[in-house]
Length: 388
Image (cartoon, rainbow, N blue to C red; front, side, top):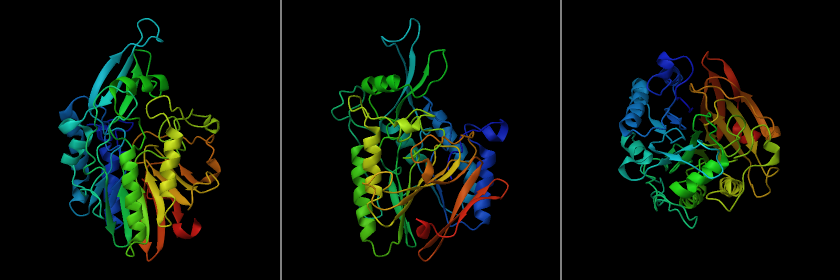
């Protein structure tokens, strides 16, 4: 499950940046259903703060909420786009009208970076199960950007572990995040591409949903090792931003398209920093789908549930079919489906509801049950590996 940032309704649904009501209830439900452990795919909190103590306090509220269950079964956390602490800048650009300006956000590096504080607040594996360590911190490359030259550490936000015969890989799809928050008093337009490109050029950092080179290479090596491991049957990859968004984040994630116009294609502009979004997404999925053991990529970000089968009919470079399961229903406000995306026919299930996903493993059989907050089944599959 993922996306427990504050929801609608106030009170426990918006407790210090956390929907403590739904998060706590789902944690207890998973415990009662005898889950061995929980993978949480990001957006734990509201975040996006310039105050380090505020960021720490929100993460600690999340921990207190799950503590009655987390004291008994492990929780593995991944970073989302809301797990951010950094600096805000007022930027005036030549193309703006008089008195208009952008408010832009740049994640920091060092001990006060989102990644460093995340590692301090949580206990996750310190790198690769196969002894590959963690990816080297990224650098700004040849994009002629400003800001810091080298990004934060991947320690305890990119890692892997094996449980029984299933290998799990947690990635950071919101590493070193730089973004655009709003246009002065004229309302939030969070994906104005001109503003994002301006922020990346002058403030440095990385685009939301973009997997940079070092993490991509680490993933390739990790999957090579898992494919050769005779003690592993299946691999699950966990990250926040969906490579193939279905509703609410067509405008960014790993697509950066136009909501309602997904068929016109996503963003691909190599003249701007990290502008080759579609090429990056395809490089990423080519690596993911190159191994027969990769069964599913588990995402959050979109506040709904969807199960999509990504195969070679979408791109001939995608060798093996892989499920994309988006589970963003742990209390954040809902997003509706965007049926304009080119892969809409590959969406096998979609629901707008609070929920969590419960996987069951019996030998090589991997089943899936999706429950809402009334304990009703939203989706059920007896064996994901056969259907694919």
